[in-house]
Length: 370
Ligand SMILES: Nc1ncnc2c1ncn2[C@@H]1O[C@H](COP(=O)(O)OP(=O)(O)OP(=O)(O)O)[C@@H](O)[C@H]1O
Image (cartoon, rainbow, N blue to C red; front, top):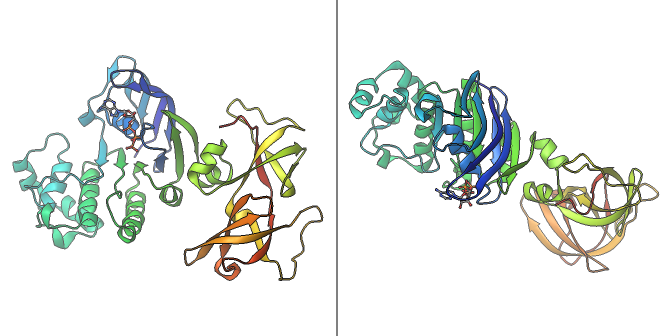
């Protein structure tokens, strides 16, 4: 399996470009998740990598092979890429085993050849891999959504691809099935040593299964990093809000501290795209994750806090209970609302009077950083 490198890729349909100078790298055997708002160019990027769209400029290299570069456009069937679409798109007139066999014939497939190859050891191995051995003779119309997606995955792997592209493969499934299939897909890609790209609308899914996450907006990649980097050190406040819950405060930066309406807290200045960090003494936008907001009942004993950390009075106005934890909305005296994530043991009922403080360090962005 191979490393993927996309360099300075510009792609458009009729009019202005839709992708503007996109750079993406996926190391061998890793899974990259691409997230971004609707229309930002995720599918366009996937289709260009697959060779279904021509790039206006830039390069795509899969392993040692340059598949797209100035004047070169390798045909899709020669790129050795497996594709798993959102709706499985199985051939309705072929059985499960024949569908997988069709994938194995990579570009040279016909229904007749697929029927001949359906009983092969490799098809059996792939069906066992996706846990569908007993359903080999079924027609696609007799499968559940999750089973159909597993057949599509087996079909994509059947050609021995260098790269597998998964375009919202769990989009149409219910949450339970989605979580189950997501885990088994990750396991399978690892077991087969496949390099993959997954487009998803589900940020939590991206953070939980991918080795790296690319966040796109307006045809550009704003950040590409490990899930932890993207969540803990987002490139911009917009990325922070896109990949998770975020509370933004304004403050003034003083060295490694920031002074906000919620008191003084330790801060890490965040560099913008040009590498420029906010200047000392300047106004900054402060990112606080809800799990960094500490909440205690006003009548509970105070826990030791650093001397300069301020506790503010508030009232819990909303409780969003999720079982393992809960999100509280706390209204402060000045009208500001904070979202705080608390564990089940820290749960406080709606209407409670509380004290809140922030557990730093927090990230401080220059205010113009979008
Ligand atoms: N065949 C096409 N012809 C012209 N414009 C297109 C075509 N397909 C997509 N676009 C435009 O290109 C832009 C990017 O579309 P794309 O489908 O890549 O976005 P996306 O991030 O995958 O969106 P979504 O999350 O909604 O699937 C959009 O503005 C879209 O309208």
